[in-house]
Image (cartoon, rainbow, N blue to C red):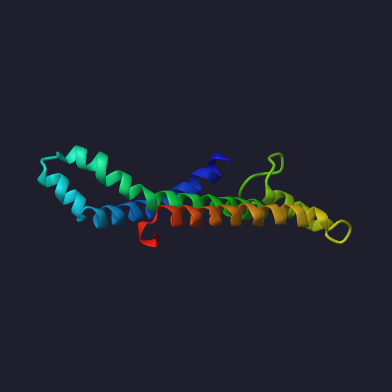
Amino acid sequence: MGLVIMSLVVLMWPVVMRLMRSSVLATKEADYILAARALGAGSGRIILKHLLPNCLAPLLVYGTIMVGSFIGAEATLSFLGIGLKTPVVSWGIMISEAQNYIRVSPFLLFFPAAFLVTAVLSFVMLGEAVREALDPKLR
């Protein structure tokens, strides 16, 4: 399980760092940053009090959306036999094992797949709701 988590994190951290960098570059030229600098605030205070709180909103949105993507990626890897193995409970393993019984009892395939889709869509919709709540341009 740790290997699956580590591989997903290693593949996704450059995207998160790029998002944070672009957010900082866009925010550092804002008027309130220039005003804080003009009032004599030090670099540490500007970073902690002004820059970070305004740059974390895009990361929070991206993080909530990526939770759904990670759930889907883990289920896909487990379904293909690359991720988690049989003693561990995973929707991907349940769907993979249910393929053998699709004609006898299709609900064994339907329920794990339905819950997987519901979980992924719920986190994506939660991310969109957080984006709408935190984006000042949409108000």
